[in-house]
Length: 117
Length: 111
Image (cartoon, rainbow over all chains, first blue to last red; front, side, top):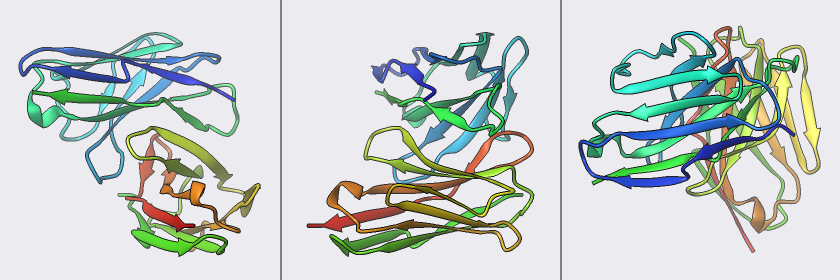
């Protein structure tokens, strides 16, 4: 089956620093990738849709200048949390859609746990 | 705006029982519906995907049904095992391509 990786799997940083999270589709091409955030005991909430070669589409309430998304190739999207603060601590999960699959199924990465001190 | 609701929020059963998890959604205009499993602190494992034109999908001890017109899906787990303990998430995919998730059902199967 299709595999999506994320790196790093966890990160601890000081308040005010920036953190970059990578999402890769390992064995398929993904024109579209999605970034979700999950707070403790909550469900996943979509943050933004990442489109290869164009600007990302952000959900209402998500600051595009704080959560920078770059989708430079068909297998890689990155999310950079700029000037991170403790309230940004969360579980960030990406997904990628196999463009050649008729089912439009999304495949999820293992997630990145961000802790901002 | 699409909303996904899962009932119950938590469920505890003895090993061997058959059980049903429920998912409902408010907008029937969906492309597909997926059931996922999430273990504590981990990512998502896709269990079953049902296309909007399908009524059900089966994988091993799992069976998921979809009634799009009434906005409902059920996940049936047969002969539950302690290893089935996890949070089960239901998600629907709409025209924008993104998934909208329910809050999940936390399942505990006791030996």
